[in-house]
Length: 199
Image (cartoon, rainbow, N blue to C red; front, side, top):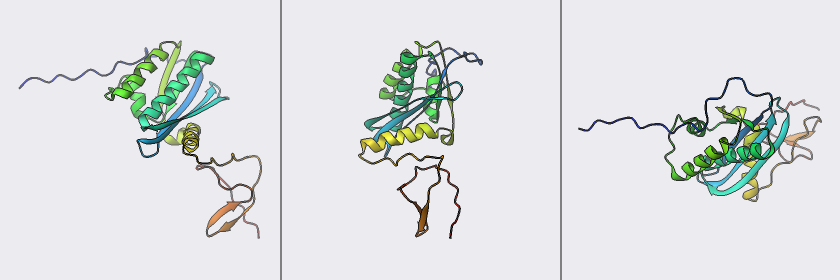
């Protein structure tokens, strides 16, 4: 019986970065999804500076695609933004463990379509002066998740709930166990509320 040798992993797309980032860099929380997987897909990218100040929110409907395709599309959008607008130093935060480990070279890329996106990412990462990527649980990626869902809603012809002004109070009434707010048809998932009962 012939000996089996372990297959090499996909090489990392970037040299190991210093634990100390540069003075100025962008942070991009990215997310992608497909309803049905494959199904109507979109990505969201929430970009801040290194201090957490909001800079840009990107989202796009991708048509009928997979979750992984949408995740990679979000990565490419964040890379393109950093290359075009600078600084050319970027920290990616994603809740896709698969994509993060593929970019780090810890997992191989078997899917041909993802391999093409992986190659594009490599070419774009090479244009940056500093790059790092990390995994976060979905709860830590809510802004990007919201943008991705808005992209999917747009593509599917659904209306996205109006943004909530957290600086003001809303009034409403309970109907069949559900709180309905006056002038605010619905709240986005994950919105935290405080209820004060008035009689």
